Length: 329
Ligand SMILES: COc1cccc(Nc2ncc(-c3ccc(C(=O)NCC(=O)Nc4ccccc4)cc3)c(OCC3CCNCC3)n2)c1
Image 1 (cartoon, rainbow, N blue to C red):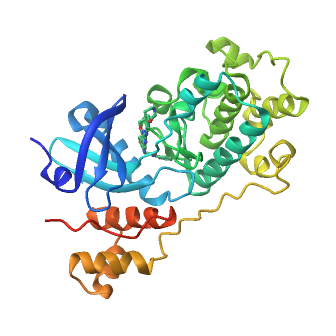
Image 2: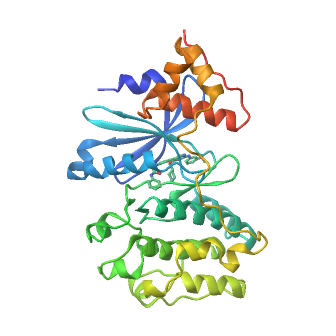
Image 3: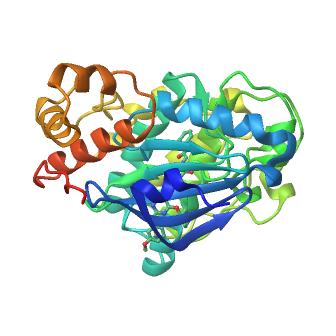
């Protein structure tokens, strides 16, 4: 049966993506008029992987960062789970690279700094992504990147289990230690994937097209790559994870610093603790509640309709749009 809860607060439109356990539909939050992405997971498709979704939702609640897609609301019914997420109008980086064939070193550097920022933050929160690839990086309306994890692969960093190898990582981006079924450290495997991603951005192609090539770590550098790019790629795609550059070292790596002269800022600019007064005022008026009780409600961060309304109002304000809710009949 349909989820009244979802249709009470959102208009639901066409499917904009599907894969693995989930499908994503375009939606619109009725009260703010803001577009959202609604990730729909059918519990029966998950089977005993249902805990993975709970892990993902808990991860999303802790991951609040300018280069990670926001979670606004979670709605659970007996058969489905709906995750209401930030919508990125620019689509994903995979389509973007295809459209441009390959990116200049300068444009790649701007994007790569944002990916390093997101990954440094994810690792600082104790998670590893494990499925980094252009399909999992979206472009927002300001042409900034937002990291997503479409396939429920992000895990607490410590995971050494091999089971992740099965459900996670798209072959071309997976680190050699995973291919060989060895114990691995999530953050080190993520750096390898970031190297493959950097190659894809700069070359419009993939460095490896089979597992043997990945375990040998041998690939050809196209002639247009600068010596600095060749060196960085080599430092990231080291077969021995202990010889691989770390995310921390990437923050102020010479290639990353070129033309920017400052290390990558990876701290979150979206602290959940701060409550915006204008948003509270608008919500209190709309909900016919006092500002104090509205503030207390928002501070509970239940990721219910109150959380969604507050975060979407805040997003409107940050984009210079009026902090207004559309009063309902
Ligand atoms: C041309 O216009 C277009 C065209 C296409 C799409 C859009 N927009 C658009 N906006 C938003 C989404 C989305 C956001 C979050 C999640 C998610 O799963 N979050 C969970 C999450 O991120 N966890 C997590 C993150 C970091 C660490 C740990 C856990 C899933 C989907 C979307 O999807 C559909 C895309 C997906 C990529 N391949 C193409 C279809 N699409 C726009």
